[in-house]
Amino acid sequence: MQNLQSQDGFRAGLRFYRKNLGVSQDELAALAGVSRATIGNFETGQFNLSANSMERVRKALLELLKDRATALGFSPAALPPANLSLSSDMQAA
Image (cartoon, rainbow, N blue to C red; front, side):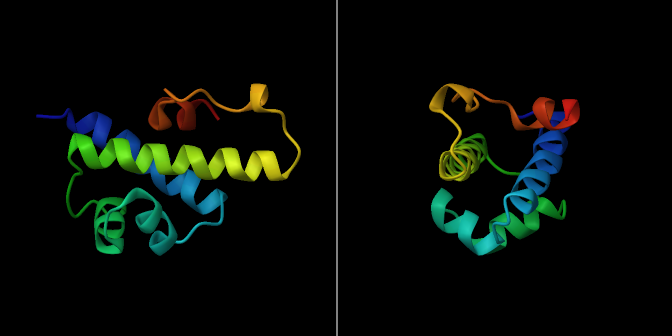
């Protein structure tokens, strides 16, 4: 069973990054292969994500971040690593 603290940290990071990237719940859900309701219910704390769903959402957010950064002219070396942890990095920002 996943630690609830990590779920809460991921929840805050998810909403922070999704909103700052200007991505709707629908867009993120489609990229992650989950329903919009899954994203919305998780962001509002109505339920927790499975480890598999968390990983899919994390990867989708990283791809969006990389796409936006590349479009702005950042080099691939300046982009976050594939193992970026949303919760700890969001808190450091």
